Amino acid sequence: MTLCAIVLGTGLLLCCTPRMQPGAIGQARPREEIRISRGPCFGFCPVYRIAVTPAGRVDFEGERHTAVLGPRSHSAGRDAYEAVRRALAPVRPATGTERAVPCPGAATDMSSLTVEWISADGTRTALTHRMGCRDAGAAQVERTVDEQLRRLGVDGWAAQKTWPGDTRG
Image (cartoon, rainbow, N blue to C red; front, side, top):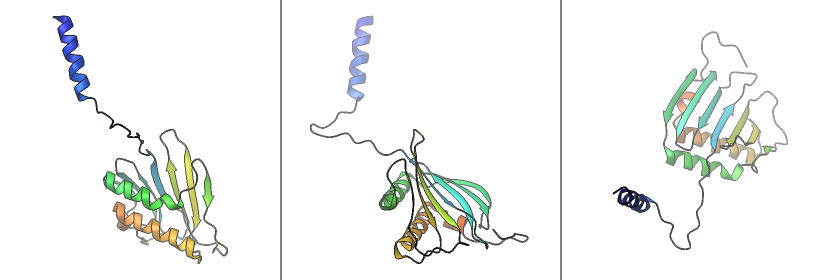
């Protein structure tokens, strides 16, 4: 009786096991959290941090000069995460490295933009950029990041707003 239950249980487990197609190559999906942050400037630039997980959870922290101050979270979904990951892939540095977007004439009083990819094992990959660069490639990075804020549904939260009593920076 016990042997019969073990055989039956094993058979049921094997039926539920996913099967690979012959010749198919298993490809693991990247499991990196993507973070986008914008630092202060000499004026009233928005300062915020955004993180999106592979599951599509979006965490926003408005620090200064943003329409929403403090933390907010929502789910944009896995498809939104995948779209953001694909859109940022062309500017992603090699895993474990940090790269600055070249800008021959960057203004020193503008805010900085950082995009980070954090893997499950903690490996950090980062792209940094000084905002306000007039170089076409650098301007494209800014546009691409702005598009991702819209895609994640946080562009309204990150929008510039000067609150009463706010100081520069």
